[in-house]
Image (tube, rainbow, N blue to C red):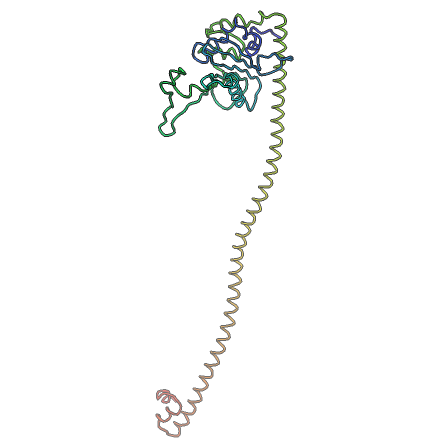
Length: 357
């Protein structure tokens, strides 16, 4: 394995940067990030400052106090953690409450900065550096709530939000461009472990000398290489777990999707079949009904017509027979020489009909 030129920043935080002689490296990084000259006075007690026997923790945090009495939490997280944002909040809240004595006035509460260097995809976004701060803005006039003149003189700031903690998230793995600004140069070092020959960011010149792997003693070299190997193993374990989780999720998703698809398809098929059956049944029913109606109507019509024809024929036949009878009577009366008018009255025939007899 090729030996590194420089030690990782998180390991340096644990072993090297707590020494006052090396504050200049941390000061340079924080000055580049916060955009102002930072002077560290003390490294305070924190969980990350405590040495772990196996040195396998993937989280390193450092709590510093600057010349203004402000507290700066610097944390490096190597492996993904779903509730990391909430842990940021917890860390800041803990710093606020632990560094004020019981009975002190609220004016003793210190400003806290939370600087988080993460080597995983934290949240969703396209940038590699995010800054979060509290802002009080009017919901009607959209104005920012500022401090009174007396408050400004007391707290040396302008806005109410300036009194509250501020958060910085450096998503190191998202940095993929040429380093232009001092902060870019620092993030490039955090990602690659290399310091460019032309890097001019505050603190990097000192880091180039003081974070050299070759400058470490035998014990520190062994501890550093062991730490790197532990990180590699744990990262491999995490990657394996993620791949297995994806594979299992894919298989379960397939099975569930297939079952749901079958059920939905069956239900939709039933509904469509029922609808189509109704429509086809209605069409066929109309056609059959029309045909049957025609046949029945024709049969009934024939029967009714025959019956009516018979009745009408009979009546017509009776009428014609009656008329013939009257004609025979009229003919006999005419032969007897009776007057036509008398004949007409007796038979119901017209004078014209009698004249033709």
